[in-house]
Amino acid sequence: MKTPAMPMLDRVLFTEDEIRASLLEVAARISDRYKDGNLKLIGVLKGSVFFLTALARELTIPVKIDFLAISSFSNRSGAPGVVRIAKDLDESIEGEDVLLVEDIVDTGFTARYLLQTLAGRGPNSIALCTMLDRSARRIVPLQIDFRCFEIPDRFVIGCGLDYKQLYRNLNFIGVLKPDQA
Ligand code: IMP
Ligand code: MG
Image 1 (cartoon, rainbow, N blue to C red):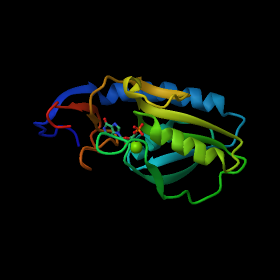
Image 2 (cartoon, protein in one colour):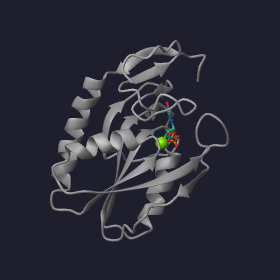
Image 3 (cartoon, rainbow, N blue to C red):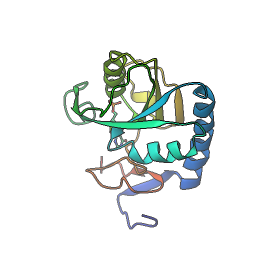
């Protein structure tokens, strides 16, 4: 989806090239950190799919991939912090070096819940990688091991991030007009 007619788009926050440059740096750091490990990327459906696959293709080490899906009411529409797993991983993570890959960490409720849940399944290690970090809205303190960008407190779309399930396939990250989100 290259040049969409999008009257609700306020501005482009990061271009495809900027995202790629940052992603390459993060991929190099991950490849180095886990060069002697047993890395498994765990993506959170659906938002992290685009980032995870782009990232995985740039890693120089062998890697396994698995996905889970969550139901979350942690955002701008309801009681904060209520997260549950709607689709679980296909395989065990016991003994593996787990890297949870997120599209965005906002309040932190989702990432904390997933990190705690996965940590209870006996991985060798567990860390967090996110494309976007909106730390201004953080409620739950969280260590982010790898991230591409810190972003301002605005609702964003593209590269997996949706607004009412649309715009995940934009190859840039854009800000919605204030009256939209
Ligand atoms: P948290 O639990 O508040 O950290 O929320 C994280 C989740 O909320 C992300 O994985 C996204 O699915 C969603 N989310 C948060 N901010 C945005 C946004 O600006 N655009 C689209 N989805 C968002
Ligand atoms: Mg998400």
